[in-house]
Length: 116
Length: 111
Image 1 (cartoon, rainbow over the protein chains, first blue to last red):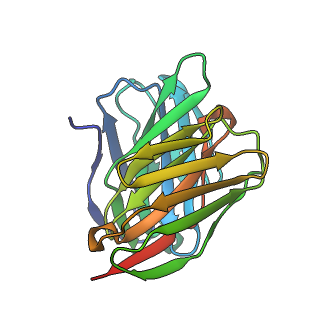
Image 2 (cartoon, rainbow over the protein chains, first blue to last red):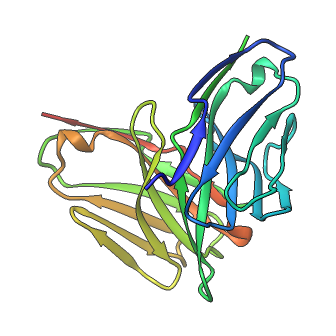
């Protein structure tokens, strides 16, 4: 029962470096998303995907890229890290109840990123 | 744009008390509402999912209600225990299955 797996759990980057946060799910969910969590701001949606080959922007997409080549994987790329991207990043996948419009989201354990 | 508010931001209660956490949302056109628990330094654990056609859901000592017309949901915790100490988050699910989160209620249950 792996669920949603994120790697790495912790990362320190220097300003300007790039990196990829990995996210994988084994529940065959078509919907996946990335959030960042900051003190006092709650969780905010960065990017999401409704299926392989389809991605779209959320509330705070600037500085991040995503791709979805398979159902299982949804990596998040930081193009040129900035101190403002210091945050905890969560990946989620959602099960969609057919014909009901309802969805239940499952979250990974998070990646704590510090940009210095 | 959907906005979700959780009150109170923090709550401290003695063990054994029954308590209510509140969640309000501005757009009643939601598909469902989900309650999560987050322990310090950990991810989000789903507690309860209330579909838009439902008024409440129960799991053990937890009961969540949903009133779409008034834009409100409550999470009731019966007979609280120190192990219930955590941050509780609600999220409204709208079109495109996007979750809009409240800022959470940090609960401390004192032994």
